[in-house]
Length: 158
Image (tube, rainbow, N blue to C red):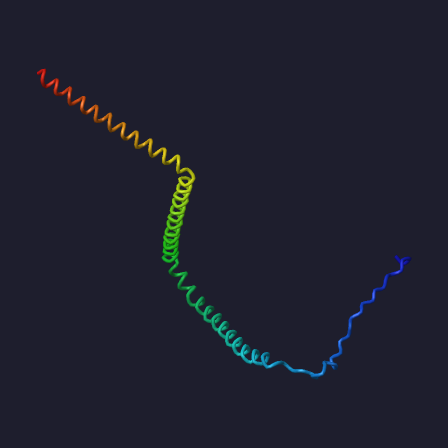
């Protein structure tokens, strides 16, 4: 390791001269920066104070209500579980209702699109159904007349 010469690297950082700011000389903060600081420092301080007050009230509340919770926990825990399960059941029924509604909407749109693609076939099926209904109606009428004529013949024979 001693045989090899170690490489030397030189890093050059430009030096900035602060005494040569420009023609204006040394400029202070702008009016908008001063206005922002004057506005935001009191606001930030008041919000920080409110956060501390909230933390203190929370700790005092926990110190007061933990013993009360421990005393009433045999009543509170089942009540909380019951209310939680009731809310869960309500939300589940709503989710099932939305699922059913969206499924029915999808099926309706699917059928409507399918009917739009095959209007000739649907019209032909409607005509066949009407023809079949007319044929069945005619056969029923003929059969009723035949039964009536047979009953009249049976009435004459007796």
